[in-house]
Length: 601
Image (cartoon, rainbow, N blue to C red; front, side, top):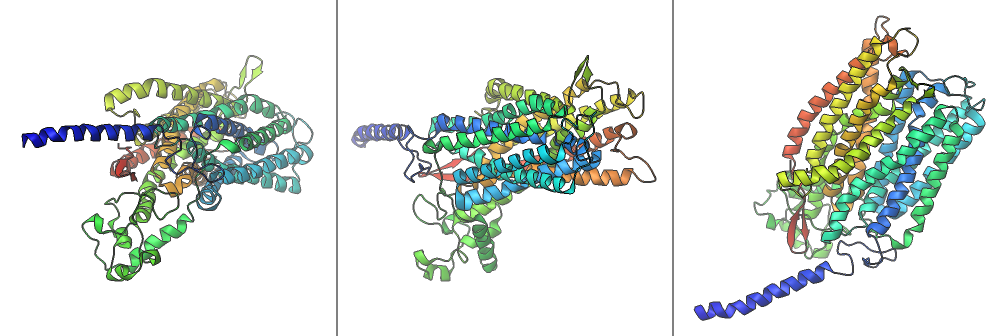
């Protein structure tokens, strides 16, 4: 027995050495191991493709595209009131509809990206549509709407818009919505695709990418919210729109220049068909009993799943009814392996893909109220600022430019989070990420609620300093800084956390869909905002009352609307806590091991 023990020592040492060498070889593998390929369809070589060289180019591309988008969006509510002669409430709702449509289109872009086109082609096509929309807007404003030149500055009145001018204007801004909306989820996922998450060094960079992605968004919008907003507010709308068009065209050019070095993932086919197959197969086997041992459920052999380019997903115990779709019956055993009908029998991975979507939906629904809070920054915050003292000495502050404090807050808190909070929280929580994505989103909800409270307090003080009913309050517009700063801080926790969470928890075959959920949350937030504004206006303006949000805010009670949103956010936060504690994370099979993506509360 002793001899046996001694005799086993060299073999164990040799086995450990071999395992170490295998791990070392794996670490220095010259090609990616996550399934990514180069533009010719060959396995991507790490030294020639992807990583920060490609990611930085995509970040610059996104920053320029964002500059173009906010060059239109940040002052759109004032363009509608000053140039198209719309009322405050109508203009705010039209901006919310437009912004909501932008992000609804993200679902279309994500679907085409995941299913058929791939992320590269989706980004290229939608950016081209985006540029066309911006150029059409520039031409329309130049020749049809901004008449006389320089009007719409708050003093020089524009001529009433023509029907054809208004029609082309709406066509152009919705082309912009379609182009930008379809591009956004694909560029977020395409950027993260440039890092191999099977490589420990690149995996860390992939996590950091989403923070820098949101940083690029805010750096891009910084120019729009300072220089462009100032030009547009002073009546130079055409210059502002042409600058946006030029920025988007440059972004597209840079994107195309990086083509040789990008890493790609092949599209995985229509996910709607796969989801329908799971439900159909489960209902066909309504009376079939799910085996207690998950090993008895159907799954193909090997490392690859039946979904093109997707890794296998381990079985989970939620939504057990759907496991019927992967339960083998006598009829299933009779079928040849190559002829198994997915409408009758699905793999565990296909079933788990559906489960992942169902598990993410409650979390996603809880983020919609936050997006209602966020969207006020582009509408009611601007209208509130326009009813305040916008002058500092002889310098006039455009109300929409106050969003620069939101941007500065985002930039500040991204640095603070990565440099201070992550090291501190990682020591306290033993989690290298500091806070999990779900925790960060919860913090974002709380800070968003504080933003609404701050906005309500400012409105109370603004109304106290109204000296002439039809004139702006004497309260300085700089008093809005706290509410913008709170919104910026909340974005770092909510939207960056959302991007990481939905992208990380989405199965390989629907990664762009995961990114689009963040945009779709903003979209529904805008539509819910419209609904709340309409309900509040209808209820509070009865019996000849001006209501909470009248054309002249001095006669209303905007603070009550802000406090209402703060209350709704508190209720939403409570529901979110329940959903977050219920959530179970996706488990992927990597090589012969299970790797759990930890995002626990």
